[in-house]
Structures are given as structure tokens and as C-alpha cells.
Amino acid sequence: MMHKLSRAALFELVWSKPMTEIARELNVRDQHVAVACDLFDIARPRAGYWQKVGYGKPVERAVLSTEAFSAEEIVCVGV
Image (tube, rainbow, N blue to C red; front, side, top):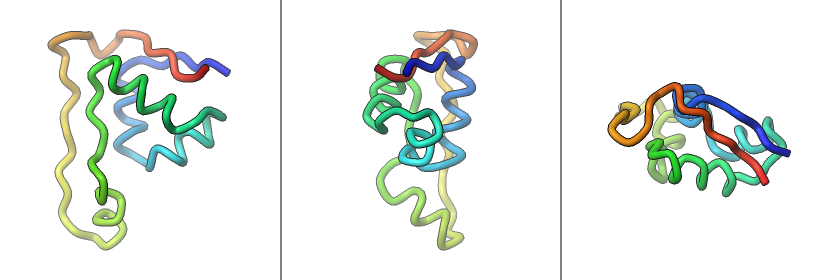
């Protein structure tokens, strides 16, 4: 299954919940989400980010870079 999202929408998803949850909602593998992020220069949370969020620790959220792609660029996630 293929899903089309803007870079901005995928960025917001990636920083709002863990990749495994996003993958489950989109019915794709989490690797598909990661590859789409990497191909379109979308920063992802580092390992341990969601654990820190869960414990209420301070975390830094990346900003969406628009150097290579615009925020409105369409990203395909899936097989």
C-alpha cells in the first residue's frame, strides 16, 4: 500500500509518535517510513527520544529543512 503525504505532514507525524505506530496506522513497515524520511531529508527522532518523552524529560525537536525539498513536496510511503 502506498501513501502520499507532504514532507511537512510526514515530519509532523514522525515527531508526534513513534515510527512503529505510524507504520501500523499506514499499514506499512517502519523501514518504509524511515526510507521515505531519509530520501526526502526529514529528520527523525534519535534513539531514546520517546523514552525521554515518556519520562517527562526535556527533548529537542528538529526543524524541517527546506534546503533540498520544499515542505509541500509530496512523499510516497510504502511499497
